[in-house]
Amino acid sequence: MVNAMKPDAKEIAYQGAIVLLLSLLCLSVLYPFLYMLAVSLNDGADAAKGGIYLWPRSFTLLNYEIVLGNEVIRHAYGITILRTALGTIGGLTVTFLAAYGLSCKGLPFRRAILVYVLITMLFSGGLVPFYIQLHNLGLINTFWVYIVPGLFSAWNMFVMMKFIAGLPEALIESAELDGAGPLRVMLTIVAPLSKPMLAALGLFTAVGHWNDWFAGAFFVTDQSLIPVQTFLQQLLTAQDLSAVLGSNNNQEALARGAQSQNITLMSIKMAVVMVSAIPILCVYPFLQKYFVQGMLVGSVKG
Amino acid sequence: MHAKLYKYRWQYAMIAPAVVLLLLFHYIPMAGIVVAFRDFRIGSSIWNSPWVGLDNFVFLREPQFWNVVRNTLYISVLKFLFGFPAPIILALLVNEVTRSTFKRFVQSVSYLPHFFSWIVVAYILQALLALDGGLVNGLIGKMGGEPVFFLGSTEWFRPVVVASGLWKETGWNAILYLAAIASIDPQLYEAAKVEGAGKLAQIRHITLPGLVPTISIVLILSIPSLITVGMDQIYPLTNPANIEVADVLDTYVLRSGLQQGYFGTATAVGLLSSVISLLLVLATNRMSRKLNGEGLW
Image (tube, rainbow over all chains, first blue to last red; front, side):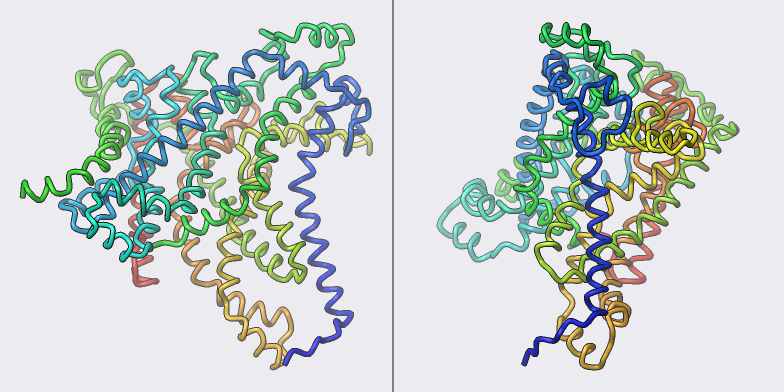
């Protein structure tokens, strides 16, 4: 029997305090984005005077026109999208194939291969030998340095194997009795059943590629190969606007900026970082359930 | 035997790319550790450069190296002290919310920062804390105070690292605890209410004990990472003004190896930290066997 209890004053105060605390927390997460958006949409010289908190005071799209007119940034966006797409699809394929192959219990040398994979999770040669190897393989200063070294993920493989082990064995056995080979079983039964797990791991891989600045900063020197995050990293310590104003095809916006002298390093920086953050802010609400699912798939150990 | 191997040819074909990739990008670099004992220059071969014994380990006698070790431990211990309890507290708070729409909203918002890079975090810090044009210094100026150089001082570096780490990962790390709380039997709470237990008593005697297995797993898994403090986070925040406290093992290897070309020294430092983290993992695994009856693998 449920008897609706009258919420007493103490209960209301308790709830109120918690809601207030958590609202402040949400505010601390969201406010920086709101602030950066306001500054990026504001006239640079005017923003430098301070006093902008929630919305632009002197509204302008000039910062965005200049940022989006920059050839390096546009090219960097192309690199980021390409590496995210190729890296995610390739990475899931290579890792899933290995996970499925190693899920076969009767496989000779199965344990030895699993140990071979596990060792790489426990010990690494470190950055410098890795760099030398990339150099010897001719991957330094090529697009492929973003893709090839990360195609196989040991961690993801173990998560996948655990998921595959939880699939109903009867389905797989009956397909095998019907004469389906391992490739057919994988494509028609295991892969379709693994969709939620693949979606979650695919999203993590994609976010990793989207956010990676390290490879672009240290394994590549050719500016036409850097991804957006590396461009951001270079601009972070820039002392002037040459990186953004150079090779710009929006001459009209540049001229306006030069004439009114109201673009500042800070407001351009805010526009650049918003350009990189907005895609994530836009897709986030739709993909959120996969993220949470993935976190739980990955963390429950088997 | 041949027949058996042939029977599994498809499986081997599926595993082969992974085996080759691990060989190329993990095992050959492991063998490349010999660079730590050789005088290697880029362009020459790892296998032919002259042996120099332990010459590359002279950094052990340099005070700068020990400063880097101290910085690494200092930051990782601080991050642990704040970063470990924070998600538990957040999960407990979120769990107390009765309105489910608000609860879902808080969860969504708190996970969000996890999906931005540390570079974006560094930009946010600049927007808020920069000396010139930062929000906080603007407010300080308005109130007549002296501007504070948050991003270029040795005192403020560690607080900024800890706070930005909390901002980025607390919500995400709380997911595990929320899932654990959700699996606690609701009848326990009903029984406690009947017994007249208040909210805090319920948290203390039901929720927290229910979280103990999760807490111990997270605790165990965080030990091996004590030696690596996330170069991703540290590197973008490092500048000449704060490098004295900001330089950690990973950034030291990066700078001396890839930027200054001291391959031998950087490999030696990397080897040292790889060995220490391996020892930490093995020790952790042992501890986990003793406590939980099963290891990490």
